[in-house]
Image (cartoon, rainbow, N blue to C red):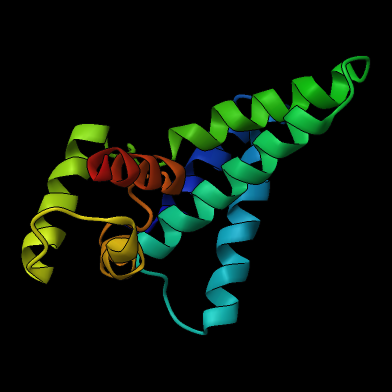
Amino acid sequence: MSKIDIVRAAMVEAMKAKDKARKDSLSMLLSALKNAQIDKREDLTEEEENAIVKKEIRQTQETYDTAPEDRTEIREEALARLTVYKEFAPEDMSAEQITEVIRGVLAELGIETPTGADKGKIMKVLMPKVKGMADGKLVNQTLADMMK
């Protein structure tokens, strides 16, 4: 069952429960997923669906962070949407899991002690392996810590 079907089913439940805020949030997420599918002209992979959900979470978090303190209605709406979106987001990898993937990439590339000069080469192989499953900032930080 695709994420589009899951979100649509959740939206129907929200409509039956007369939960307008949840229904509106799910409607926006469903719209983003459908638009991406239309742009691609074929079904989305699970990784692509997860990336879209994460993108929506990032954008909503940015809306929440940039809204002025006195605009409570905007902040509350963004917070409610974030709560709903996070239900459909995949669990992010932990720093330990990222470290294991990095060690695998280092072995694959034949690098025993990574240096700053190797970072670009490592990231080029590493990022496709963790895309949609880990936060890029955490991946970058974990790799930087391993280089010390």
